[in-house]
Amino acid sequence: MFALLVAIIYLCFISLGLPDSLLGAAWPVMRIEFDSPDSFASIISIIIGLGTITSSLLSDRLTKRFGAGLVTAVSTAMTAVALFLFSISTQFWMLAVFAVPYGLGAGGVDAALNNYVALHLKSRHMSWLHCMWGVGASVSPYIMSYALSGGTGWNRGYFIVAVIQIVLTAVIFFSLPLWEKAQSNIYKNGASPAEREKALPLKQVFRIKGAAACFLCFFCYCALEQTSMLWASSYMVSHNGFSEDMAAMFASLFFIGITVGRGLNGFLTFKFSDKALIRAGYSIICIGVALIAVPSVDWLTIAGFIILGLGCAPVYPSIIHSTPAHFGVENSQAMIGVQMAFAYIGGLASPLFGVLADAITPNILPVYIALFLVIMIVMHEVMVRRTEQRKQAV
Image (cartoon, rainbow, N blue to C red; front, side, top):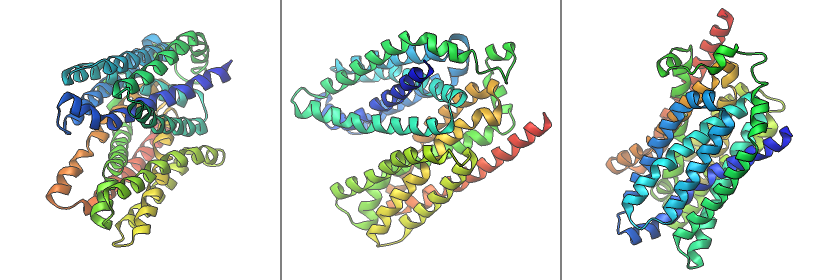
């Protein structure tokens, strides 16, 4: 029966990725209908981001009170309802209002699922599950394209994804006994019953040895990843002189590199530890950044973004999966919740590069992401050293 639950969790991760690229795919049409400027898409993204940050920070309290299964089910239901409301929106302000439950639901699912997987499943599943998120994020633009090309409009695209989420919500609610049975086994080598139910205040989470370094590491990784995703195309136009359509095509290779890399990383976990894979990822990212920085060699720029994506692949899932080992089972939900919050904050840092690119040039992209990379590597090593000292002291 546990295998059935694992299959449901894989579906949850695909579902988690489905809404993430809908707005970008639909906005060129939506903005015309709502008579809104291009920049208004950022308003919706920021509202969703603030919602995910809020629910991530509340995840420890909610999960310990209601259980990971129920939190995941309710959060998925919130996302489904929000997507349906998006599909019937007729004015921009409606999107802004409905983005609130959208973000709250997405953050709740993300934090609860990542902690559940870190506690119950091996590292390979964390990599493969995040690969499934990539599959979901890759499929949704095709769903939107189908809706737009069929003449039913962007509303239909959101409606289709909402229906998928509603079906998944029903599946999760029916599977709640499986979640509860698995949950009862995770503390046999960990916390006492009192510790299981006690939610850590945010101030206390930051006092855990190595926690601040871990959060900064997450912030820098997501700033690096999101900046690369958002600005790769602009960099290729400025640095290589590619046309906009060619740059967009080649820039997508970075995302493909992450998705394929996470699939491959799952097999590497059979032989290598999370720590070794994270360090290998950093090394590969360094190679990717160096290739991107080489002037006037188009194929090196293209190869650099693919390698950059491959290097990013193991970092995010491996840090999450190693959280219970570094910080203890009793602290893992609180830690992962704050990790998710810092991940979303890091994602919001990517627009800063746009300001710098306008003021200077998009060609500074390799230097910009290299700065985040250096801080990320330092913070990861500080986290490892401090958590090892903590375990030795205990």
